[in-house]
Amino acid sequence: MARNDVRPVIKLRSTAGTGYAYVTRKNRRTQPDRLTLTKYDPIVRKHVLFREER
Image 1: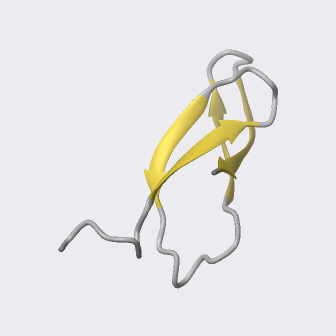
Image 2 (image 1 turned 180 degrees about the vertical axis):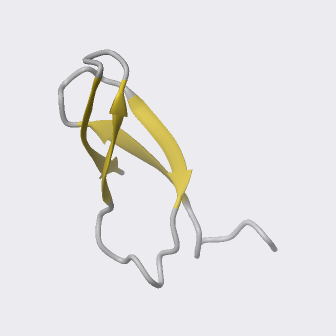
């Protein structure tokens, strides 16, 4: 039971509108809200905000 509902796989979608996405895991107990991270978008060649997509 290592893969359960506590650490689900989430997709981080770029807010720049390019459609680029990162896939990661998060701990739902410590981060119950939607995750937002600043990461690199290679299509626009800049660091932009990535939001969790459900």
